[in-house]
View 1: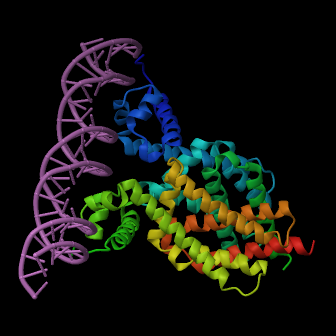
View 2 (view 1 turned 30 degrees about the vertical axis):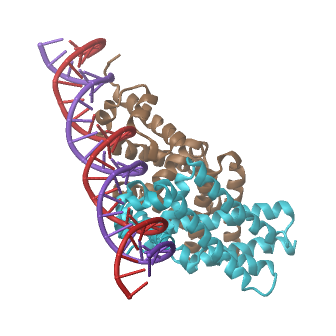
Length: 198
Length: 198
DNA sequence: TTTTATTGATTGATCGTTCAATAAAAAATG
DNA sequence: CATTTTTTATTGAACGATCAATCAATAAAA
């Protein structure tokens, strides 16, 4: 089997296996042997391609963040108008994209969120992504709201999205995606309503 | 020092030390030796009073949940009226009580939230608390909203509270408590507004 | 023949638990 | 009041288990 060009294949397999293992056992109980066994390779491969367990975890988080960014970007690029509300809807829908709400992705995301508080490398990734969401939202809200009001509404919307996500991760069996999107979009409506007409 | 009646004192010391250690190093890197050293006792004491590390962690989570429940209950009992909005405000304020938003409590709470997904004992505690918050909110909202609308608004408010909390845990340095309370109360206003007058 | 891919046993370190020993206070005894 | 006895509190070294990382060996393509 040893062939050339195995690296991208193995990396993807191991990242998938990492999410599946975290989903099943939790980050705390995910060993490199469980992950490598699930990926169908030996434990040594992880150090070979990722430099170690930490490298694999960071790569997995990067993968999730990249998917999230792509989900949002794809929906926004599909828009013809530059209408603020349409872009905000797209941002919300991107955050609840199918690729983001599988059980494995949600649990892995939350596990990294918790871990990132004490690991500078992960924290950096986390913050970059956080800021991007927040500033994107704020930028769109400013089209209809004064600066301070836009910032406050952005904080609320970002918190609502994360909260819906968090609760979805905790109770996956009764996580109604479309209802979550609906709640977030309704929040957008209410925030914009309070600005234009006033 | 060995005296009678040490148990409640040691238990409290160890629970405090647990939160402080999780705040500093994260749950994953919190060993019983770090915790016991911080509490000024030996490692063996933990097994003696809590049966083991798991027992200490569960006791710590129970302690946090009890504090949260007390914070909410205290504020609601201080109300003279049975006005729905006043009770909802009290629930929000109780969730952002000073005892709930210290760095140590927030990080510990989030760590347990993540862990509870894979530990049935912790998950049970988590769900009981979750349901209580949700049903309390729903009950108050029903005073002004039709059942289905009340349930939906309750989901939104619960998610908003958790989301604000989550983001506060992640960026403690710029966590504006009063702003968080304000955002949640504003959400309540908007939800109730859409019901009565319609 | 060289390079790339992969294995898996070994190693070193860490951690939770156990338990026999110790110490001090409390209770019992005279 | 002085003493033994019992109970409660506490220690910390030893043990066993687990895990991430390493690396020499192997195998198949290039």
